[in-house]
Image 1 (cartoon, rainbow, N blue to C red):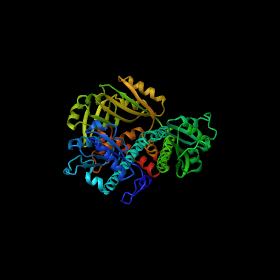
Image 2: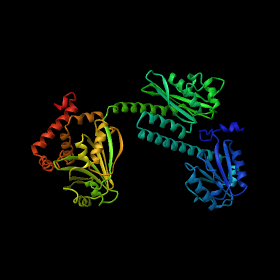
Image 3: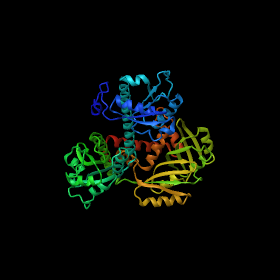
Image 4: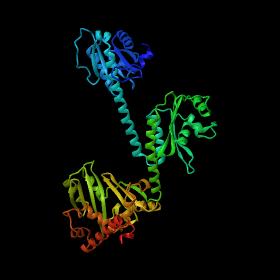
Length: 535
């Protein structure tokens, strides 16, 4: 049987392992050469590399990502084998299988590094039993399958992280391009989408960009850009694979060959079966992989780009949001946190201004009810525990506070969170011109004020929710929020309308009127949205 015959031979279990099997043969002396030779004679797919070693230093640089199997030659002591296998288990991705060849007189031990050891084989059996080769091939098949599955999970996690963190089309496109070159290892990549005329326009690139730069630059010397696989895939709506670039076939291939690019794969980017872009990768090897996995990635990118485009269009007319950090220990909540464990955190659920005070509903993490109440008493008018798990507290403090300053200057409190070194307040304003006035108003009352970020209202709330809340007056929303967080809508109620009125210093009739009006507007928005302001 020739080497070519062996390369396509069955492994005896109904499957085939076409690629060479990378085996590291480790031994203490010249026996590694004889073991390597015997492996080559057993199966032409075996590609052994030898290392004379009795411990970690001897195998440094030999443990690679594509290592398929380890064979320990005879004459290694048990301690030497254990040290070698422990090192390989630590450094080799996926922990490849290991076969231990023992002297015929050596007892079969099974207490070697169990994460790796697949089988113990005597020298006599290794030399004469053809089943040993089948066992090695079978173990390698399982190892490669597990490695492929692990790589797939890793790739999926990387793509999900891109989708989670990218906030715009440009971030998505550039991140996917860089993913193709860093995670998938392609030499270069570019992604393009259509412009307003429907023409394909390259927008993002990554990797070794010599050829890509020439492709994207009309003055770069390419006379026939239409022949590039990305352009062909977009125009045809089907993948385009060039597994071996021929510089005599066309100008784009000549330019690619000049850049030592050997192959290319491109796929269309679709949304609801309509191509609106292309993804193209280039490699310096003659096999650029399959178009199937690239198409799957392009489908994901297609949906993500369309979603980002919709989000950007919705946010283009949205309110501005500013996050302001205030490091001032005179703020009551911050002062109280100074007496609590360092990891205590407080989130403001709602803040309702009264004539001279503001009444908060807070959630607290990292502190117990009693210690939080004790810490708040010196800086608050009153403090009441609403629920203990989660810890929800009602707190009344003197005005002004950052939250009341926001309300007094035309802003809407989106959220606030405090720790012992300060408070971060997020507020929405109608336009960015209001931001400076809001910051100046806070600086007039508090020291060490810093604008952390300014952006569009990207809270992620659906548009219909914002429309519902816009139906409410500021007072109606405040009272509804306060009632909700006080358990007014629970059955049985945690607090009655009379108790809410006492807490807010209002009459019961006023509370009931605001609750009824707010509820009517919200329900009208849900069930009769064409009704203006819930009337």
